Image 1 (cartoon, helix red, strand yellow):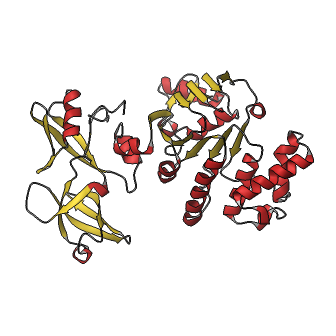
Image 2 (tube, one colour):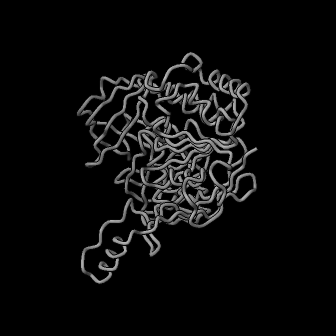
Image 3 (tube, rainbow, N blue to C red):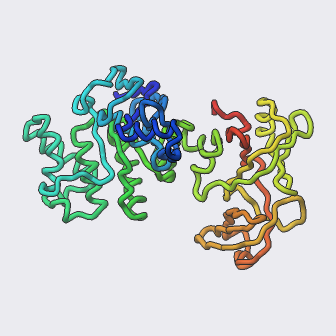
Length: 404
């Protein structure tokens, strides 16, 4: 069993003396104000890398922390591991407060981005090393190493050194060294980022299989939202040190809490337009973008009505796969194809709509793709149940999806 609870966790990196002097001079107007790093908060204490992080993780759950570079996800992982001190807040593992517990006593294993293997040791020696530190008897050690190697398919490489292995094989060894002692919590910090696309796909599948064979709770950090969507039971999306949304992959994809989440999750990313939501009657709404008018599903109309939305300017979003080309005339968006990308089962059209790039995904079985080359004129509409509406000031979802 391994449950985790992070309660109001905050990490502040103190300012250096020279930075404090610069801040004093700025207050006096002696030099221009510099841009803050990654748009993080800067207080008198220093740079706030993680702010008010709250998360409950169930036993054997696979949680993925995702966000752009500098959002605080790796810092959060390192605080869980004990490699970074927690400035404020509490971290519980199995209901035990572990803020001041040393990393070696937390029963946590960590897989790093750069493998962190000992180059002078063989694969077997790398796997044995954490067991030797725990003074595990030799016969038991051999059994544990053989089991870990079998799970990860690295038995043939046990007598090789890391330099004789491929990137995927090295990553398997790094994972093997983490799981060999059967930890309660397995932390993974962007473990696949150094691999090529084909190997990343293979290793994602290996991690999913591994998860089913271990009794550990997984916390995985990545900036790749494809990894987040395919691996996680739940996804924690971060930006500038703050949690934006926590939910299942389907929840964050279908019901983004704000414009940032909407744009970050999904590949290609969501198309964004400036338009308006019009309330035509009680409980009746339509969306307008330029001269185009789009119907909304009954579910979306109900949510807007429950949230008291009136006619207003809005940021309108629709994913490329939820856009449909139309041949008939009507009040819909029109544009000219700038680029047509053949992807095999679909074509990705980059359509110029009043100077704005809009991506439309068209299945190749549904249409004559030969007519969709550069310069083609197209009309399209949005799926009524897949239109997203955000307040232009707060950037929050107008459907008020906090509890979804």
